[in-house]
Image (cartoon, rainbow, N blue to C red; front, side):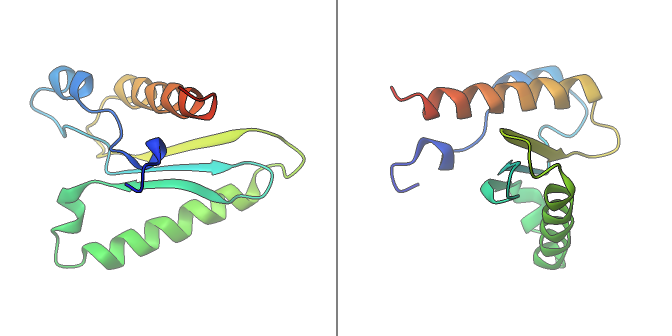
Length: 112
């Protein structure tokens, strides 16, 4: 991970325990700057990578995420967090996951 705390694996444990019988993790997570849409972090779940068309699928999702980020108000400041989950994944857990990702990004931005 080149020593960058943002490149480390996104949080998992609390969501895995809470999502028994469902997908254990969001499939994709992107973090981008709002003012220019630049991707700062991208995380892909390993199960998606294992599919025969996994790389193609990831490329499509990444392209769609970039289009979403480009459509955000360029005068806005801040960071946008985006995740893709299975249809059956609880929305509440997805938002809790994004909240935890945001906390980690803010913590790493502020230093140790």
